Amino acid sequence: MSLPFSPGRQDRIAISDLIRELFNKVSELISTQVELTKTELKVESRKLVVVGIYGVAALVIGSVFILSLGVTITLALMHPLGLVWASVITTGLYLVMAGLAVALMMAELRKKSDTVDVDNS
Image (cartoon, rainbow, N blue to C red; front, side, top):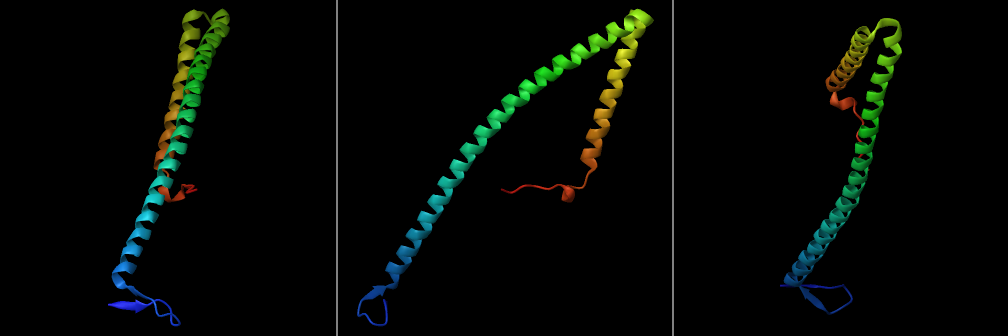
């Protein structure tokens, strides 16, 4: 079975040729989409590595800051209160900060997921 190619022409194209061409075009489209996805994954994974490096650096610097803050508070309170009370007060401050962080974490976990804006770009 064959179909006329255009009304003014005598050329005829077989349906099998049209189907073959359709499958070739679909195959090309799928290949192009797969390549595009691979490229996007490479770019995003590179971004993720850089973000991870910066995150680790921020964690290390933040940890040094927290350690220095504890030593500073203890030394500042040591003269008027003594070493033991200065250590207890510093420990209490850290406990309050940790409790606040846990409370904020729990509040974030309890948020409804439909209120979170997800960027799809």
